[in-house]
Length: 267
Image (cartoon, rainbow, N blue to C red; front, side, top):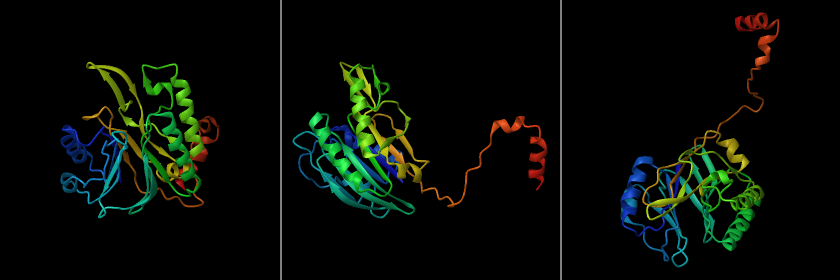
C-alpha cells in the first residue's frame, strides 16, 4: 500500500494540476492527502483527480485561507472508513488485503494554541487504540536541531516539546529515505531556512507489524514542502515459539568451534 501526503499550499494555483498529475503518475499512490488546501468551502472533486483513479474523497475546509485537508482514495483498491476528524486531522481505518491499520492525516497549524489543541486531541485518540496506528502529515515541528539548517538556539526547546508530545501519544519517528529536509523558506531566490516538518509517525504495534515500511521524502514540486510517500507491506507473521538465529563472533575463538560447526553442518 502506498500513501502520500503533500502540503501543496493551495489547490487553486496554476501549477498544482500539472504537478499533481506527475506526482501520482510517478508514485501510483493508493491514498493521497493534500494539506493546507486553502479551500474554505466543500467543493466537488476535480474531474482530473477522478480520471487518475480516485473515486472517493473527504474534505476538511480551511478556516478562511488557513489550513484545510483533502483526502482521496479508490474504493476498488482498499477499504477506507472515516472515524473522526477536526480542523487539523482526518482519522480513519484502512484495509487492503493483508494490510490493516489506523491512520491519522494531519496538518498542524503553526501556532502554539493550535498545536496544543491538536496534540490534546491526538492523545485522546491514542488512549483508545489497540492496533497498528500511523500519523502522517505536516507537524510544523522538528525533533532535533539537526532537522533544521541553519540550526537555531531556540530549536532545542521546540524539539524537546515535540518529543514530549510524541512520547505522551506513544508515537515514534523513523529515518526517511530521500531528502533530509521537507520544507524551505526562500527570499529573493535565496534559501534562508530548511526544516523537516513533514513525516510519518508509528506506534509500537505499527513498527512491529510493518518492519519494512519505508518513508520517502520525494523531490519538491510547486510547493515549498516536499511530498512524503509511505510504503507499507503486509505484516510479518512469525511463529509464536520461533526465535531469531544469532551468531556471536566470539564463537570463532573457541577451541572446539571447528569440530562443533563441522558436526552440526554434516547433520
